[in-house]
Length: 292
Image (cartoon, rainbow, N blue to C red; front, side, top):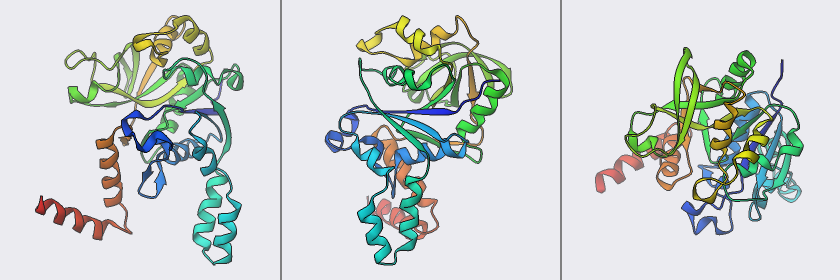
């Protein structure tokens, strides 16, 4: 039985929807209250039992590497001033996982960062999670997928049900047939279908387990729509040699922070859920809403 031992986080995009903030700062480092988006993704991977994490970055993404490294000057300052809670917090970040960083090279598109890790992955199955989306669940999203992979040993895509056609138009939507409760065999994946044309109400939500032949499939696929290399095109080609499954994530709350409105909603929702700030912040929200 093959096991998944590595996870890949593509984090090389330009973040154009958040310009000008992302001109020099990675969108993956935008804070959800006091923690960057990408840390939520890393924590999900670690809580699922994977410790080797490959982050594919670009030229303006150095802050990601710095965040997951030791900062000796800051650590010395915190220690000297007795800020032990803060000190342990940032040291824990640096010890979270075994990080490998790869600079993205090749055509634009979300298939390119996957191609860039081929030499590191070798002939093993591996996970892919986008750096600007995460799911909070009692059993982590990736852990649910790993459990399914243990059974099926085939490529997997995570999915959530969305009934709003406008929301479905933002995602890859699979055409599926159910094989057991919460597990679907994928016949095809349509990337960002026009409203009313989606083949199901399942939206892929940014987590994959792929077999190593995805690299050959992406090479065969080549450049696709909008002159980009699309991961979904490679996954569709995998169906020639594999069954590909969608795993409907159970009891999870999916957060897509890749656009401004959902990013703001995520901050508000998670702030209201935090015991250290929900009282005062909840009152503020009520008061400001009444004034508008």
